[in-house]
Amino acid sequence: MCFIHKHILQEAKNLSTKLSLHSTLNKKHPPKGKVFIDFGAKDAILKGKSLLPKGIKFFSGNFDKGDVIEIFDETNHYIGKGIAKYSSEDLKNILKDLPEKTKCFIHRNEMIIL
Image (cartoon, rainbow, N blue to C red; front, side):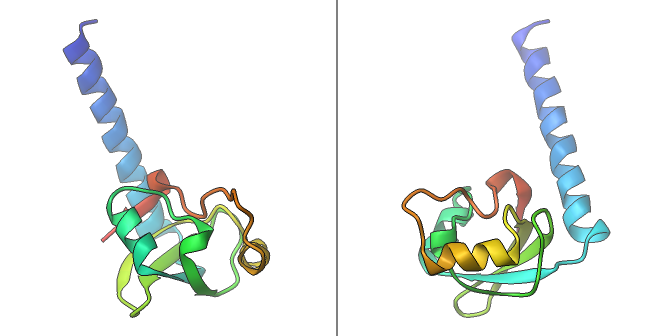
């Protein structure tokens, strides 16, 4: 298989994954919580980065790992939504005492920006 065919197949796979994520985030699972992020985090995710806990100012709702979470900036403007890597209880504990190295809260591949 030539490079071009491999590239086309990979792009089709990526599109299929994105469409599946879009369907999951918009139709199958209603949001269970909200996070409000600072402008640095907003800038980072608009540039394709993952959402780290250190960019979260506060959150609302009771959610589990894997639930859909809505993302807002500090001025309550809706940014998008994604799949939580932590429960609300775990996030609360992480935000109390932010460790130096913390895994992302919402990975960029599991986030839809609107």
